[in-house]
Length: 114
Length: 110
Image 1 (cartoon, rainbow over the protein chains, first blue to last red):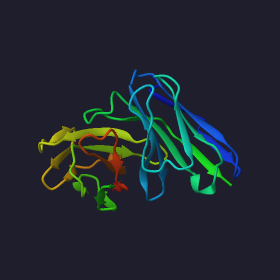
Image 2 (tube, rainbow over the protein chains, first blue to last red):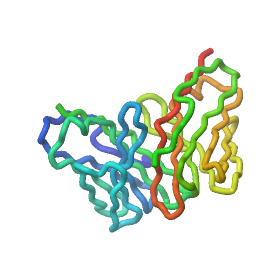
Image 3 (cartoon, rainbow over the protein chains, first blue to last red):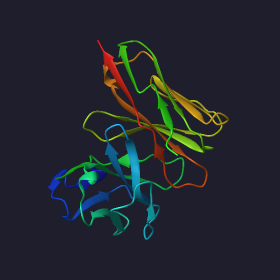
Image 4 (cartoon, each protein chain N blue to C red):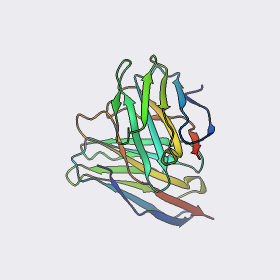
């Protein structure tokens, strides 16, 4: 019973490098989300996909791109990494982008940019 | 749009009670509550929909006052396992996503 799987779990990048964070869910959920978590800031939404084929910006989308590859997979790409993007990234999914649906989170990717 | 949580941190002894508050300046449709232990993913606790219904989950319950745009999480007879950071997530009508508060760090000591 995997739920939401994120890869990699840890990554160190140099400024200017690019990288894609992968996320997959096996719960047949329609909606998927990418958050970043910084100390004292809580969870902030980067991008979300309410359903397959759609993506929308969240609170902090600058410097990121996403792809909803299919119903199961939602990837987050950093084209040119900056130290300000050092954070813990969480992917989540929910049955639908409606208020009565809980979000299920992956274990996170800890990303450091030097 | 980020909701405000209070207190920021609280320390309890086993068996004591605590209340965590979450308030928003925007009209809300629902409030979600999650708990995150150190180094782990947030875990869903409950959802409150507008209507003021109080939800329960073992010794953890919550209420939602839609007129005041506030929700409160009640932890009774706290256990060591309750330690962690509690986040509220708020949703406005018509929105497809949540805005999370900065969290309340709860520590339960023997």
